[in-house]
Image (cartoon, rainbow, N blue to C red; front, side, top):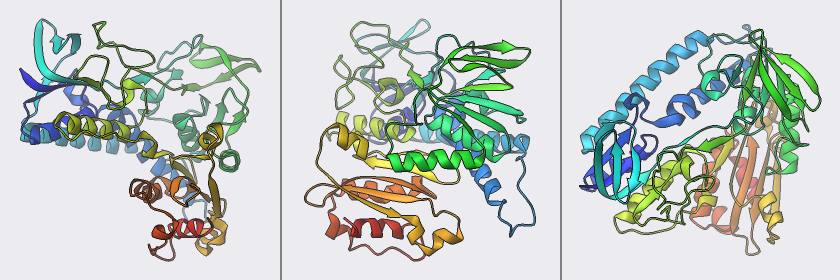
Length: 439
């Protein structure tokens, strides 16, 4: 019998490695060992952020100081580089597992009973079981997904050539990031979404700026639009909406993701949208846990990693609650990025929580005028005693700078404590000092 069996080789592997280092007997079950690292590594944030990085450089080449002007990036070359990085990264994960004593088992594992996992005809037992099986793209009714003209992010990340035009259905992180990517590469992009604005969770001022930037990139916005039907028509996507019928070379369906819960073959574990868990990520069956996308709490790779490490700590006696509100979220739009952590305006208002709001526009920094980022803004939230409770950033490298606020939240810093920090000049991090001083 094992101490812990981890089902799913995505960010679950981080927990397996830590548990093995603590001296536990550990097995990690993954249906395809070439896919260790999961969706984020192979079909998600790693390849997408590399492509967005290239697109960002392409945007910079519009500056009149460059002799070389922007053009479509060479996708085939980019894909070769991505494949090489993924190959090395997967190999590195295998080495981490083997060097720490994690037993890697290839196969589709199913939880059939308390402490029992079945792979084909073999049954494995463990004191604890951690499910981390991820998620898959959601395809709305009426859309005939064919992986050619109608695709998800799985296929779009493997494109060897750009389409002449593309429609993107959905304005979450995937939809907004790929709208930015294709528009920056001179592809005709139409972003279709069902509501008046691209999000009802982001600060209204930032929403307005994101929408304006998308338009400047050349993205056509289609708000208040629902796709009723989409099917292949002569190797293109024919899309029927409440606003009419349109033809696009490709339709990217970016309408969210669905937890993978087929692994559960017992009624002892409750499921709803995902695997139901408590604050410690324990399921309705004692000593059985579910982390990451499959519990539907927060579908982010770094959230999955934090959750599985929290579970291992809890199993080994250091029981504590992981505050999911303090896990940063970000969207890699172009040319500026959005990031948030902690309590934000929409959450605070919805829950009638009293708060202080401080806003600092990047145009107040000279560096923003040189780097054409004057539309950026930093918004900070504090409670009545000036303790920082959240922030929203719209600026270059927001996904990096949000870590400063994450640290402040976990350290429970107030305004005066925060202001003891000196930020380098000239940098965008200075804006965080300025916004704190405006509280």
